Image (cartoon, rainbow, N blue to C red; front, side, top):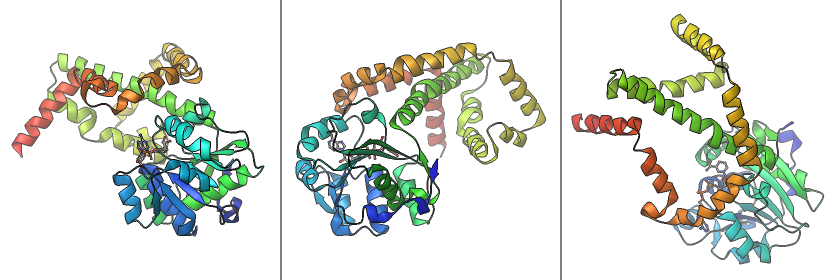
Length: 337
Ligand code: NAI
């Protein structure tokens, strides 16, 4: 089901105190959109630790507090818009103990609710309002009077009014203008993590291996980098896929290309890849195995240097032929300028 402006009634949130935990990518965009939709500034509180995000919120005229507990005490609606891996620590430690029994908790991603990492009282409402866009686009599309794709769901209905409030929030941030899509934290988490752990790793590996095969056949670094991604052709292909159709965008290519791509894709037996994808979805994402693994490294993500597991993964990934060649190409390009 898709909900539009006419399905959402702002009066459900008009008199509520709305607290934004976090003023980053999503927080800054959603808080400004909400205010521009007519929610009074004095009803909006930004709770943020003392950093440049807090300064930005003050500069944009919001009341900012740095005590999460105090902010939780006054919240009728609480947007949880800090990074997913930080949310359980901050919410369970500082917010949950002070939160009103009937407050509405709003998440922009299904992760922590699906994996039950937040300690939420059964009397609270829990809704997901999850834009499918980066924050700067959530803001700029709103300013242009346009909507953006967004998932909405009610996960816990303590008040009996959670769905109406979720739709009002969607409207206030500008999501019902082009239609907010009914979803669930399970669906959102499954699709998000599957794309990140199934689909895109395979695409990265395909490019990496294709690069090495062509390099071995004598193709130059420059030619390969431009042929494969630096020309931005893949970006254009995906744009055309969104506009014209995933398969039908091929009609923009030459006959040689169309024939090669269509016959080549049909010749690939998808059984192996399908089984691999099922394994990722069921035995890593939906059963919580990835979440358990990620929880163990989450605090180390704030470390500098090689103590940070993400930096280690970058170091290992950048050792491949594709990344090394790209480094050489970019270096040569910079020195020629
Ligand atoms: P972000 O990375 O921009 O978050 C920055 C904010 O988090 C700042 O206010 C910062 O002060 C606060 N913060 C960071 N570390 C903290 C800590 N240790 N303790 C307390 N506060 C801390 O976050 P982003 O990207 O806006 O994500 C927020 C939520 O929105 C997440 O659930 C994410 O999955 C979701 N989302 C994000 C999208 C995006 O475009 N980045 C798209 C759709 C959903």
